[in-house]
Amino acid sequence: MKLIIDEELCTACKQCMQVCIRDNIVVEDFAIETGSNCFECGHCMAICKSGAITLKSYEGKEDRIVDYNPRELPLEYDDLLQFLKQRRSMRWFKNKKIDKETFEKLFEGAYYSPSAQNEQDVEFVVLDEKLDEFMELVYDIIKVQEDEFFRIKEFGEYLRDNSTKDFHPLLWEGKQLILTFSTDKTSAVIANTRLELLAYSLSLGGFYSLFILKADEIDHDKLMEFFPDIDKDKHMYSTFIIGYPKKRFRRTIPHKDIKVNYY
Image (cartoon, rainbow, N blue to C red):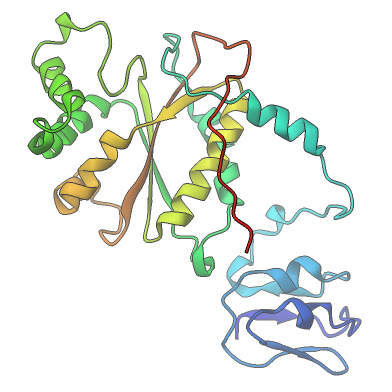
C-alpha cells in the first residue's frame, strides 16, 4: 500500500477515484486504497480538495507541496509563444561560468518533469572541471567515425593541437556541459527541455550536441566507466552545452513548414 489517507479529512467526493488510472482507489464513506497497483503518479494527491491523501514515498517532503488555482495560469499563450520564438541555439559564450546555485534553479524544472511510468529515474551530470577529460574520452570512442564525419576528424585535430583552431569543434566557446541519463529516452529529453527553457529565462543559453551523443551509441559501456555512480542501464540521451551568451539575436528567422496530418 502506497497511500496515506486521512479518513477524517476525506469528504468522499470521489475525485481521487476518477483520476486514478490504475483503479487503485474506491470511495465509500471515505477513500480506500484497493491494493498495490499504485505507481505513485500523485494524481489523487494533487486533486484532493481537502488534502486527505499523501504518498508514503514523499513523506518528509511537505515543503515541495504547493497549492495553486488550476483556473489561473501564470502566463498567457501569446507570452509563451513569444518566449519560444526568441529561443535560439547559442555557441558564443562569455568567459563566465554558471555557479551551483544557478544550476540548482535549472534542475527545479526537471524535478517537476513527467517521466515514463512515473519512474523518475532521470539523472544529470554537470561537467566543469573534468570537461576536458570527458571530451578526450568522447573522441576516443567516436573517432571510429571520423572518416564519415568531418567534424569528428576536426575534433581530433583540435585535441592534438588546439592552437590552430579558433574554437572547439564540438563545444565552441562552451565551458560547461549538462548530460542527461535515463532508462527512457523520452523522459530524458522532456526533462532537459524543461531545464533548457528555464535556462533562457535566466539569461543563459546553449545548444545540443549530437556528436557527443554518439559516444553512448557507439560504446555505452566504455562511456559509463567515466560515471561509476550512475546506473549502467541508463543511457546518455541529451548533451547540452550551456553558458552566458556573448551574442543576442534580434529577430526570428523563417523555418520550413512543419507537416501536420489529421486522421
